[in-house]
Structures are given as structure tokens and as C-alpha cells.
Image (cartoon, rainbow, N blue to C red; front, side, top):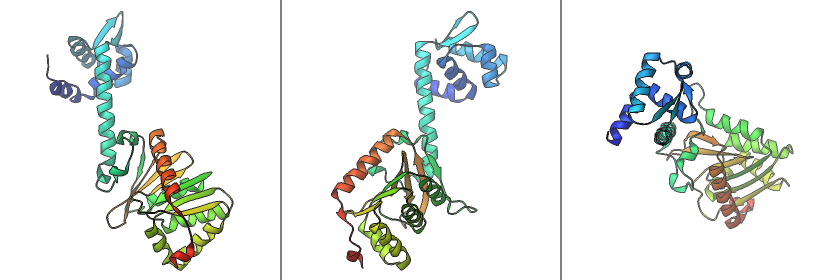
Length: 263
């Protein structure tokens, strides 16, 4: 019997091995169907299927190959490992900035997240991604330690235009920064007076910048200097549950917003 790490190496050395095992674990396939799906030659498939048979990972019934119970177990395991590594690769450039200690969900739930980062030709890409989303939303909630000019302007236009309701819990530091800019503060005051918008002030600093636009959660990731590094968006039910719960907790503990406190 091979050692577990040797078996992992055996599979990892060949994309075709991984793909064939996952295919036959999903449903029985003929060799021709496997060749069409993977692009592997018949000779290569013959070696792969023979190696799998030696390990009792596949069985043959007439012309079709199917995974055994242990073959399905291995296929599930390698599939999960690949998914974990794909997620890790997506988050690796951001891990130094992610407030993971605040996340009440497994990072696996970010597997399908869209990560938007600034580029030389599109330095504002993360904010553009968020703005596009909130322009088309029906409802918008937020809890954050900051509110940038672009997002505030978009929310202001959408709310005053009667397009949706807005609820936000902001850190005092975020409101202090907005109050220091006359133009931005005018928009904040207009929002606070609007029937479709409610702003509350967090009792303590909020370590995460999050938006809930309808069923999608947006996380804005900044470095230690406050420079935006990326936006993440996901429709994961687990992340949405965490964000909804966290918003509700901040909302219940927050104080009503009085602009005069910051002037």
C-alpha cells in the first residue's frame, strides 16, 4: 500500500488522472467518452485505468468504467483539496489585509467569490465593481469603518432618486473623516434626512467594511494605510448569513446619528 502523500503525488503528477477519476466518480463512462472529455490518448487512458484498477478505485462493467466506493472517496477528497487550493490562490495576495478574525465563516465559502483588484490601467476597478452593483440593487445595508467618496455619491443619488432604501452603521472615525469634507458632509446630511435612509453610529470601531446589496455581500479590503487593495463579492449563503447577523448586531448596539455631534 502506498503512503497517502505518495498517492497524492501520483494523482497530482497528471491532470488526466485527476480528471478521469472525477469523471467516473460522477457517472460511468466508456473509454471513448473519457477520451473525448479529457483529450487523452487511448494509450494514456489505458495506463490510467489500469493504475486505478490496481488501487481498486475503478471497476469495469461491460464497456463502462465506474468508480468504486473508495474511488469516489478519493475523488471527493482530491476535489476538495483542489477547491481549497484554488480558493487559497485567489486570497493569497490579500491574506495580509483580510480581517479573518472577524469572519464567522469558513474561508471555503469564498471559493466562488469575485475578487477585483486595482490594475495599472484600471486603478479604481474595485470601487467600480461595487458601484455597478449598488446602482442596480433594490436594497442596501452597510457596516463599515469608512465610506469613500464614490460609494457615498452613488448611494446619495440612488436614495434621493427613490431607487432604494439605505441602512448603515458607521464607525465614528468614518463620520469624522466625512465631516472634514464640506461636499461629502452635505451628502451625508442629505442622506440622514431622507425617509429612505437611516445612518447609525457604532459604539466602537468597526473592523470590516461590508455592503449587503440584495443577496450579495461585498467586502472592501484595505491595507494598514487605508489604501484599497481589493473588493470581494459573493452570493454564498454562509457569508450572507454572517454579514446579516453582524449588521443586525451593530445596528442594535449603535446610536442614532446626529450630524451636530460631528460639527
